[in-house]
Image (cartoon, rainbow, N blue to C red; front, side):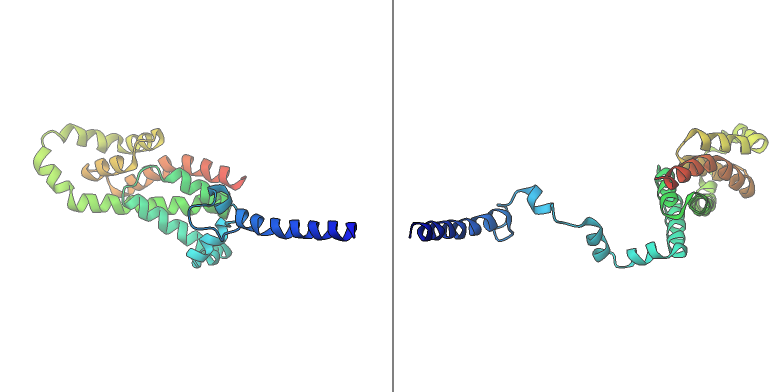
Length: 201
């Protein structure tokens, strides 16, 4: 009888403890009563991203689509003059596409975006700047005609914000081909190093 009573008491104790354990660690409590760590611990971030962005999985499965996505994103951000995007984009593309392919994709996007920015600035802004400060820009024009390729390349390598370099080049008499070559030479080292670093992660 003592054994049966002990087992009964032990069973009752277990029954008494189970609901409390569930209430303490489960999600049945009212909002705001569960600790933050306990609430977010079981959340799978990657699955959540794929649920919110259904085409993300398709991009990761297709090298071509992923390359086009990086090229388009790079070209758009550079064309809009957003600073500081080349290194993180190059690193990410290198990690997902490999060093060489990631580098080529970002270089192509950067050239397209910078050329679009260059042409838009030359078309819509250069004439207004010339009308207002034409006399003061004559000395600047001469230097750009002689050494514009070296200046733009050096400014790119030095990390000067690309929208400033592009806008100044568009206002100057620098030819579009020279600007594109200087942009390629100036962007290539940073993009290549970042993409190769991303490929070994």
